[in-house]
Length: 303
Ligand code: BG6
Image (tube, rainbow, N blue to C red; front, side):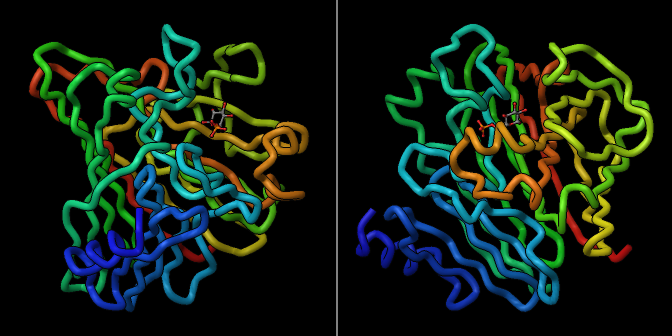
């Protein structure tokens, strides 16, 4: 995308200093939002929210200081959108993990300053021959953000094909924390989880989740709010969702983070992923003509 394209986007969708398009690292166009309630930045590749901080708060979303910015590569941190499958593809191991939505360009379809001070942004995935090779179905997908004291994200899939389709998805949010050892996650007690670091065994969660090793779990029957309590920063991040009955909890710990190459030296201690998902038993079978909305709201409370 050229500077001329950026200027055109600003003319068509810019909202003065509240929402503007800029050329970011790796020649990737970025949307910068700054309103009285919060600031945020969103890459047009992947409709990938990279940062969000309500005013007078530390950043809520973690963006790796060692993130790489390149076309066709997912950015480490923020809110990658996993779609139209979560994790490895069910039948074709050559297709990318977590689908392709996070690595292709999206277009802006609407922007709006909302009366109470937040900013609305709507985007749509741009289909191409390359994307159709991976997903030969017509399922327009949109992401709607509302950026304010709360951040809300709606991932809306419309099945305009003539057959039912199975969709997997997740808002793979990386949360910023003081230190992962200071974190307790509530809201998943008594849920069955698939333990991906123990041969996919199914186990039952008892009490709050704490971290002392690599953790990679898909919690099932998870519809309650997830509360990420950070004892170091004395804050609670609340994750409230609809259209999702699974939650993925992930921290790569030392060795896996080191092998990934874009976490930075102690990055794994500064983040935890709590992903509102349609994963494993919770994939969505979307009938012809049907719509599915995965809606997540995040806010920060004091402890
Ligand atoms: C999590 C998965 O959702 O994403 C993990 O459960 C995976 O298994 C992690 O390692 C990161 O995936 P990626 O493709 O962004 O490196």
